[in-house]
Image (tube, rainbow, N blue to C red; front, side):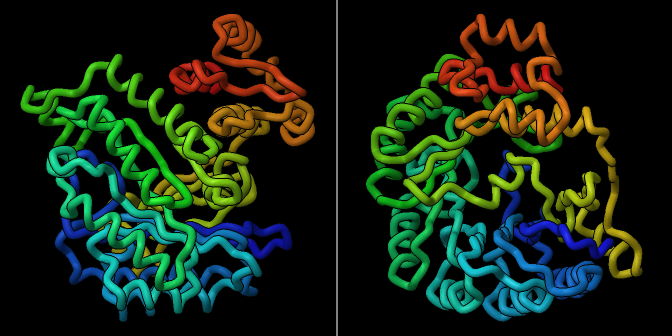
Length: 379
């Protein structure tokens, strides 16, 4: 790894262990193999040894999998490896994803001791039936309980993930889920439409007809409800799926959306360095085999051309509700945004999916329903 002066100020660490793989999950993880955690920590130490000079981080994010599936002792070891490798800037955003049932007081104490100041909970729903369909192991009351205990024990930046479009879920049930989230007075809410990824059990069950996906009209109404209800309760929609109270937008995810470079460690982790995007082996056992044999854990890399970087910047930038500053885009990429796809640009402006205001181009509220269609034309 090069040791240039302009190094990333953000790092992502993938922790691939879970108690159970939920039927909708397509993330790189392994369930029921806690015997591999010690090997994982050894391999991570090897990967981290490529980083020299203790660079300073402004954001640090542990995702998974379920990082909090590790025992308190294992978490201490994990955090010590990172703290040995990097310095954390004053005001760092230090995030950890967590399963509500994993966060007993001992685990929260370890997080606080390590400097974690933001926890993202995989809540997914406040409805028992939806939680059952999603194969989650917690109940609605568990979410409220852990949100309160996090604040009491010193973590005041709390986020929850919610999923809409769950088979059998009604708009009324989704409204109640939004009510429940708002009533917790947490700092950040992410809302995701359920997707059926090839290779997951949900994909197979839907193909076999044993799982019925919701109709598009209901899903659209659910997303519309989130875009109406959360902002009216003081949550600013700053990205297609993300809502935050003032000052609590996820700074780490903004690194991705702004096209900035970042470190990535662990199986399936992406990294972006010196204009090259790399992806580690998604298979946990494959990644372990390579790294423990002193080989690279990277499965694929691509160095983007200036035009590819510009097109990617459109895709990422339009996810943010603030959109893309046209002059800054030209300065940064060397390309004019409209010129990358002139016919599509005009078409989406006329459809009312894109708008141009004060030197910015952004998705309209209507355009957010069609974000994938818009960005695909620029890619």
